[in-house]
Image (cartoon, rainbow, N blue to C red):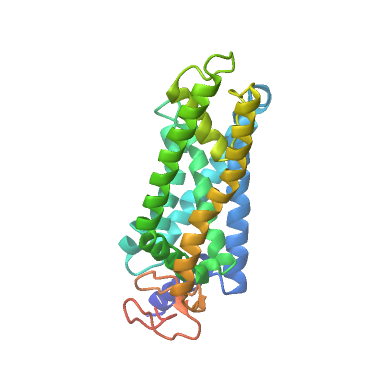
Length: 278
C-alpha cells in the first residue's frame, strides 16, 4: 500500500512544479524552461548563418538534440501527472508543446523540416503564466467585443477611405501623368495615394510638379487624422462597456488541467474537483 502513496506523492509534486507558476519551484521551472526555449531558438537562428553552421555544425546539432530530448521528457511528464491526459494533449499548450518537439525528429527522415524547430517560439506564451498576465485575458475579450460592435462603423470608414484614395489617385494622375514621376496609370496613382494616406511613404513614386506636391502635402496631413479615427471608434465602444478585471492565479487542477482560477478558490470552476487534490 506504500508504493501507491509514494507514486501519488511523486505525481503531486511534479504536477505542482510543471503546471503551477505561483509556487517557487513552479516559477523556477517555468523561468528555466523559457531560457531553454530562447537558447533553442538562438541555435536555430545561428544554424541559418552559413559561416557559423559550417564551423560549429556538430556542436549546434548536439545541443539541439539535448534540448529536444529535454522537451520530450517534459511533454511526457505533463501527460502522466494529470488524471485526464487528453485534457492536456488537446489543449492549446499541449498542441504547441508537441509541434515544437516533432520537427527535430522529422529532420531525420524529411530534409528541410529542421527549421520548423523555430515553432518553439510559440512556447514563450508561457510567460503569461509566470508574470500572471492572464488577468488581462478578460480585457482582451472586452477589446474583441468592442471591435465586433464597431465593425459597421469601421466598415463605413474604410469604404470612405477607399473612395477617397480612388479620387485622390485619379486627381494625381491628371496632374502628374505628363511628367516622368511614376504616375503612369490610375491604379498606380491610387496605390501611391494609399501609401501616402497611411503615412507609409515608400518613395518609389513622388510628384514633381508644384501642384502635385501641394496635393501630396494635404494628403499626408489628412493621413494623420484618418489613422486616429478607427482608434477613437473602438475606444468609444470599450468605454461604454468597461469590465472590471478579475484576479487570477496559475494554480492548475490535477483532474482537468484547467490552469486559471480566481485567487483563493478551493475548487476548480470547470470540473468542481478540489484544487491540489490527487
